[in-house]
Length: 292
Ligand SMILES: [Ca+2]
Ligand SMILES: [Ca+2]
Ligand SMILES: [Ca+2]
Image 1 (tube, rainbow, N blue to C red):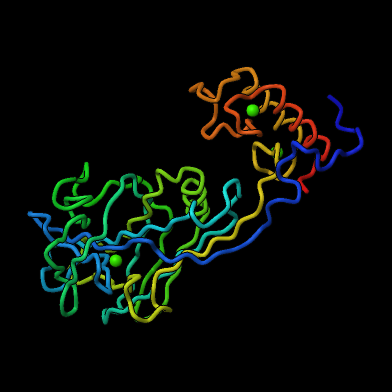
Image 2: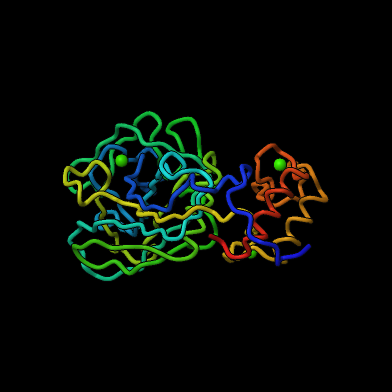
């Protein structure tokens, strides 16, 4: 196949032409909560204005972890490539010692009930229906596979959190998480935030989406750009290495084939098969060579 032919732009089948635009969004969580370590798993703070990560002060052998979820697929147009993801939280606790706090992608759904902790909120409140707890994804009937939450083994982003201030997390792994959540809405369970879990009185206190001061609430800022049709290895050029990837899927044909990459990216027209109509789309993009 020749790459020297005149560019063919905006074929009717080339879905990216003039339809989607780059953009950015700031998302608020659709749910946030604290997992308070306890033997009974009966503590939560679904509707409270604070969430905690680290080891507690007045009950110093117990761990707290924040959970938060954003509706990415409900906010970012499908088919976009996320280019930047920055999650920011406001630390409102009095303990200013710097502590590493790490985000991990959650692997199971969880809930936010009506529980509201009193005072400093570090002790939690009795869990309400559908609250996440240390033991439960949804109190009282549905438990985590592992107490303390089911999450990816590797951290996606880490930031040192000190005193009263706004802190941000960003990394290529966080971008990959957000892309996964956009492409797989049914598996968008958000992130868990873990602080120092080996030193008493290390817990950091963060505003939740229920904080009356809107600027203190958690925010996830995403930047995105239309995917370049045909650029299967996402290096912003459509060339021979993409053709190799296309041909592999083309030979497998059916998107349900277990050997086809997740999401069946070579199925450009979204009909469940990688066949000649997708090849027409690919050739048009290949003639463009460099992504528009
Ligand atoms: Ca909440
Ligand atoms: Ca490419
Ligand atoms: Ca197809």
